[in-house]
Length: 123
Ligand SMILES: [Zn+2]
Image 1 (spheres, rainbow, N blue to C red):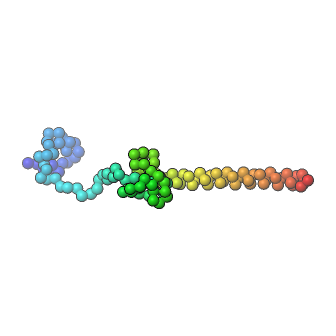
Image 2 (image 1 turned 90 degrees about the vertical axis):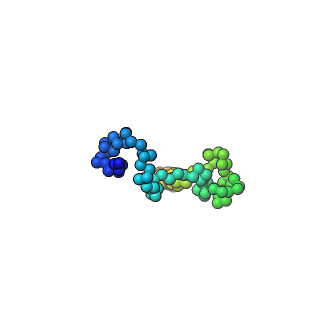
Image 3 (image 1 turned 135 degrees about the vertical axis):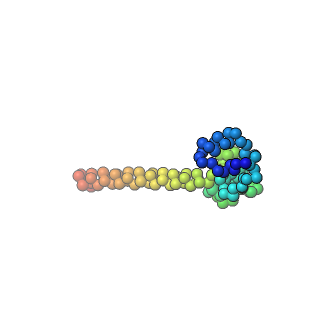
């Protein structure tokens, strides 16, 4: 019998498997120890406020930040704590932008005030 691993190309391999059954070669198969897919645990949930792992808690409250959560309501927790980091960076950037706008507004105000003082004097 021909060994299934000795093909000269994908086409030849495809033609072979069109006419053969892989179960006939089970004795030649080896277990692959390398991780190909990682199944995300369906129970792993994280706090929306601080990304604390909420797994195995008896209370419906984050012990780290006190935020409540409901295991039945997916809007009250997250399964992917990486998204929280992105959200934090976005929030920080929006605060920085608001700060810059406020700073720029104050700067404009003082420039206008100073130009009026120089033009018209104090009185
Ligand atoms: Zn928390």
